Amino acid sequence: MAAAARPVAFRRRAAPLAGALLLAGATLASSATSSAQDSLPVSRTSPRVTPIVEVVRAVGPTVVNLYADLEIQGGLFGPQEGGSLGSGVIVHPAGLVVTNAHVITGNSRTARPTKVTVSYRADWTGNRVEMEKHPARIIGFDRTNDLALLQIVSPGPFPYAKLGTSADLMIGETVVAVGNPLGREGSVTHGIISATHRRLESPTGEAFDDLIQTDAPLNSGNSGGPLFNILGELVGINQAIAGDRQFGRAEGQGLAIPVDRVRDLLGREFNPFDLLHLWLGLEMGDGEGAGVLVRKVERDGPAASAGLQAGDRIVRVGDYDIADRTAFNLSISTLTRGEPIALAYQRDGKKREASLRPVDIDAAIRARLGATVAVNSGYLLFVDVDERGAAGSIGIRQNDALVEFAGAPVASVPELFDRLRKVEPGDAAKLLVYRFTRNRPPRQLEGELKL
Image (cartoon, rainbow, N blue to C red):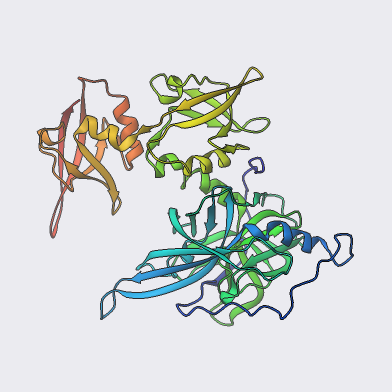
């Protein structure tokens, strides 16, 4: 994978554009029929093998077609079944796929995906090949940024796309879009970058103001698919077709999420340590060369126990080489929770190895509080309370919301774990709790927890 790009600094704002997300309806179109005869091989030195042909052959195997079975809530007759289709791109050899969130929800706030299937092909020379199909699981989901992270449930390694940068996109440069428009799997279009910093107000109410505009033809089903530059680097995730209320959908105005925002989300919203509730006890950053730099090691953490020190550079996680922090996070996402992590790192020019066992945050919290917590409806709720534990002994009940702990607000499981680590065994911590009663405002309860 490429080294982490510098962040995009979008200051200009274009005139607002309304847009239609590229999702197709529940009725899926069948794939286009193959030609009667397989394509004949063409020499790579032939003038017919243009840069676009080279790009498609190189990156085609990284593109997947996505199909989601949906359960749609609401309506007069209760939950209904539906479906949606779209596209995605593999960004890690373990089969991690980035796509749009609306691809797996059918562009509906009341839809829940019950099954997601991916299909792809390895040969992009034009020969007839069978599409491989596998189930996929949802790892991360962010409706606000319209992005989702999935994993193909099949042994890898898979070919994966190199993340480029959207910070230096040039108006007029060539781009290639690949996807699943109208269910026609593996369709390729190309065009140019028409503009950057475009704004889109989606039908679901979200607004995006840093989008890439391209004239590469896009249709329903291209959503979530990749936009590549002529070097075959991923520069965007196709999201919508521009338009407005007066004139409807625009021709030749596709919109894509810039890859720098995707990279940022892979390290922030889709941070595996938050998603999986793991703690390694180290802080990381990108530096010169490949790998991730260890900036700080907590004395009581797993990294210190494994022998890691500040200044070490982690270059491998499990079976995967690490180019940057994004690659590190993605590799952690593929590991089995509860299993030790095999690391390779460099110190003073020498390569070393370590086995690091992450702390299970949920188990650690339960061991100290005698309770399990989870975020629900915007609150950090106690969902399972042992009456004999620290929380239960002061009257904490199931569905009470923990608002403040040890003098500071807490809104997530990792935040609570971080606060708990700073309270020594035998000390006490003050907490503020909301207790909800039907049709009444929440009661505020204060207490002190002996730990």
